[in-house]
Amino acid sequence: MFITKKHLPRRTFLRGAGTALALPLLDAMVPAMRAERLTAAAPVRRLGFVYYPLGVDRERWTPTGEGAQYELSEALAPLAPHKQKFVVLSGLSSDPDRSKAGFHDRAMASFMTGCEPTEGKVHVGIS
Image (tube, rainbow, N blue to C red):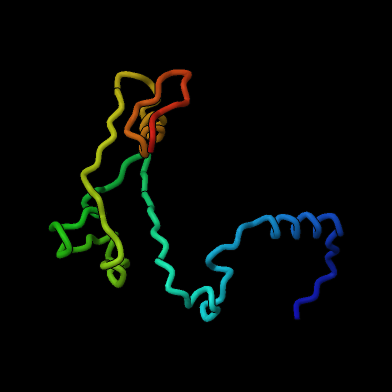
């Protein structure tokens, strides 16, 4: 048991408890052997992106080959045990107009949509 002489104000405790109650049930909160985990529900699909606003050595991240028989690159090698569970997309490009200032900012804004943001407008398309 870890006991400290620090005092936790009642309001702070209640605020934290209220926040915890307001959170949705996360996957990590359900124990692995509970009935909810053992149902025949379809696995959850997830999508993740990696974006480097200042550039990256693409050769380290781009796998060689195509289809299911591709070879993982140096940077992707730690994911080898999970290779059958993910897909690597490469060769995608988002190249905003470089004649304007703020190239990195505009590239980030169009990363997921492919639409270049216009001055003073938030709408950049559907992702």
